[in-house]
Amino acid sequence: MNTKILVLLLLAVTFIFFGCAAKSAEPQEDDHVLEATDENGTNISSDSSASTEDNNESLSTEEPEETIVSDETNKTAAEDDSSVEAEEPSEEETTSEETEVAPEGELGTEPTDETEVSEETEQVEDETVSNEANSTSTPSDDEIADLFEIDTDSPVSDEGLDTEIPGSD
Amino acid sequence: MKYIIALLILASLSFAWTNDATTDMLDARYDYMVCNVDYAGNWLLMRGECASEHNVSVFDSSDYMDDLRSDLADIREAADEDDSVDFGINSLQLSKHSLDLLGALVVDALANKSLGFFACVRTNEIHFQENLADCRVAAMENERDASKQYVNNEIDYANTQIEELDAIGADTSGMEAVVTHAEGLVDDIDPAFDSQNPTEVRKLYLRHSRLLLLFRLEKMVSTIEYAKPIIEAGYNRNKEEILEKSNVLEVDTLTLIEECEYSSSISSPVQYSSQNAECWIDAAELFHDFNSIKLLILDGVL
Image 1 (spheres, one colour):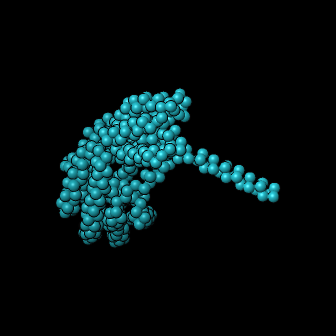
Image 2: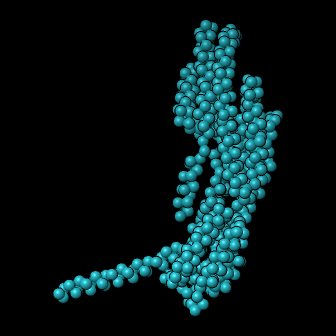
Image 3: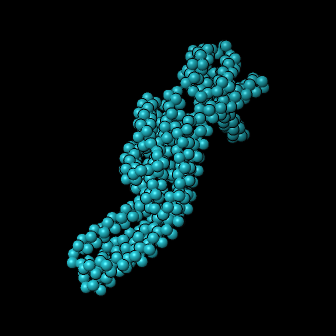
């Protein structure tokens, strides 16, 4: 009898342990979203967001440095940022870095209702669209680097149309 | 990390575009060389017979001919492997051995020869010269077709590069101007070969060499002009160095483009050829600088 209870207890402990582990895995997805946000240039990162207001300002000052970013892309980014600002609960506006990183804090907590979930999904979709817009309009450093390739073959002679062929006369 | 990037760049360059007409061009050039070597062999045999007939001694040319035939075999092998570089190097070797033979002939001609011997050679060589001319015409006919195909392939490839740069918003007007000149070159291929004058054909090659060089230089300018503002607005760690290098390279490239200005009419092939050589030597350094910017950009990202 005691053995059965012990086994049940072990099962319960195992269940609780894996349950917690599954929960702790959720923020990793959020981290990915945060990375996407960074690449997007919306600048919603722990480095630049001393506050959500500052976040908005840094967005407007840093975006022109991304050069060929379309107006529409800017708009999308601004909307994303404002939505993040709107969603952020005022009570959580503390000085700690963790709570200031709005998307991470938002997505890391469990949603309270379906509307919130859909808003977050939209936000992630917007960020993805914005990312795609950026990638098509502004070439990355890798893409620019690829342009710097030129054939270095110099002709052995210039007497053949294939310039490496010398004349036979 | 730099070494890895450099290896990647080398690997990508090793997959450079090759012209589909290269084989035909190499074959045609090989055929032309065979005409010359066959002529030399037959002419030397005939000369030996005249020497026996007129009781004069001539030098032993067998080693010289062995060298020429060995070079031809190497050239054939290079042509079969579509190896333009080897083909060129072996062709230069053939030219050198041909000059060696010519030098030996001049020295031998001054040693104890009779007038009858010279008359015999002059009379009998006419037949061989006619054969040589016919052989060259046939080889040049093949070369004409291969040349047209070769340049047309290059124009297609050039237009592809122009389209790619144009699609991302680069100014490709300089490259387009070179392609227009290349189209003019294609139009001049038939008249040059029809003339059966090797000098006219050589002029085509000289013009082609210049255009090939100018297209690469113009492409570099287009790329630099396009990339500079993007790099300037970006966050690459080597931004300052890239921009400084790009600015210097742009000025140097534009200067070289001006110095190596293209002309469709060539009054002195020797002078034009010499200018081509100088332009290519100067450009080699610029090509190297241009490709090194890629390394700099990638290094600044990592």
